Image 1 (cartoon, rainbow, N blue to C red):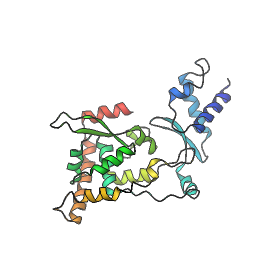
Image 2: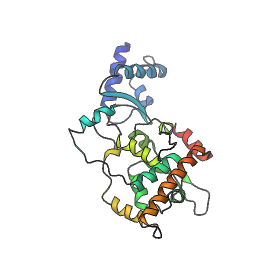
Image 3: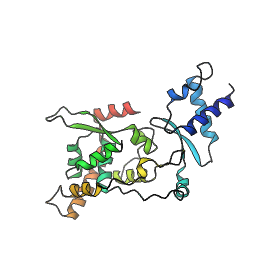
Image 4: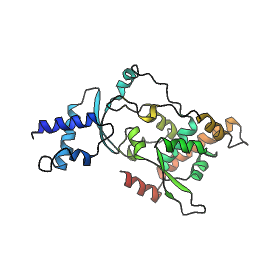
Length: 253
């Protein structure tokens, strides 16, 4: 096969795929004699260059390669199938942000950082969306579950690894995460990632439960506690040398 033919096969397979394709799957398209793994990586790079300046781009995410629309195309595509804007509460974003930047963490860790009890429904919602999972259990009384993000979380936000999460110097982690969730690209078929859909109807009940978890604080005080905790968490993340977190990140890179 010529290089042009190989590129055409790769392009066709990636455009027709309904999910990211890892190198192992792309290798199945060719015999070992036709294309080596190194050749495959080089040709994918050429294909990326060939699609520069177009409405679609070839990107590598956590679970493989895929075509997706460029961010600047979203305002046009949204006119074809208008969707309501996502409705992620601050409580949900704070919980997901803490898990993303501090993983692995327990519900107790999240509650210590946020200053309020974490709603069971919020955890369930994030698990049902495939964004978080139980990584193990802490060797402590009760053996609490350790939570972390999934490859689906990275794919939906268009990230290759946890290293691609934005730096959170002075910015709020939940705000940085919100920007990623709200601007998640669509795949080559024009379907928005999970991050662009509304949360479940029972989200309001979860938020009410979350707010009721600190009955001794006024709404203003709860907001201050939450924001100060988030800022404290940002500082802690920068200096965090948790060996479990380091091991988890290496596993997902």
